Image 1 (cartoon, rainbow, N blue to C red):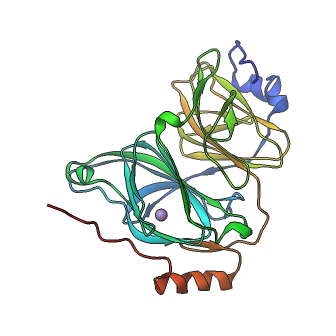
Image 2 (image 1 turned 90 degrees about the horizontal axis):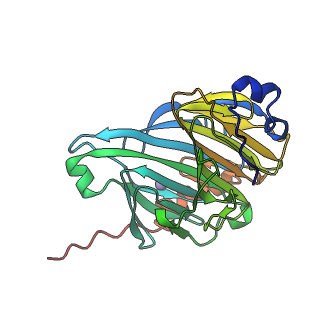
Length: 316
Ligand code: MN
């Protein structure tokens, strides 16, 4: 853990003299998320995939769900659909996602909770607002990250890791200006409880004005920072709400900071992982290594070999 500097970090001082910058990975490019509708029609901000950035190997997609405030009867989600060959990581900030699947799993992902689902050989699932939210409406905000699986693990048995908010380590810097929720990997001496196939770091970092964090990230790992509130500096580049900075492989750490004079805090997802460097064939909810494997996935789904969600048993 690096001591947090006491003096204010202005953008200029970071770019030219900042102590952290000499160690920080620099930014290869800044991407602005585009808005689109997903699932049954809920709004997302999607930094990638986008034209010119198909993936950040091993990451295939990042969706910011909402933020949206549903009115009564308006809330929608993603009804029954399959996945094969990768993992979906759902992190809810506000509202909830109720999930049911062909393996007989069912549950609720609420504020602060994470569900790390390894689809492996295949699941059919639904991700929906609960009954109360459908009736009364309410706020919804969260993330879904898609993580590719190594070719050797694509057909493994599906697995769920469900981590309630209270089991996600939350750590603060000594000066109290940086707070990190450690969803995967390690930060400020705290270690996540999630088990991943390749080394992955997934941090929710909140920096108050004047706050700075230098996070170790071995240079061989692909890494990006997605800002979803406020603005600040990542690896020497200015980044604002709805923008993602993709990091170069030029150092073994990255520095995030918010100038002392900033109007408010910056919220960032800092995500990094070991690249798989394997061929990627993707088609909708299936991510495999060859076109033939995609055709097989479509056939397996259509033939019901990924199962189906059992109708809910209603007893009276
Ligand atoms: Mn899904």
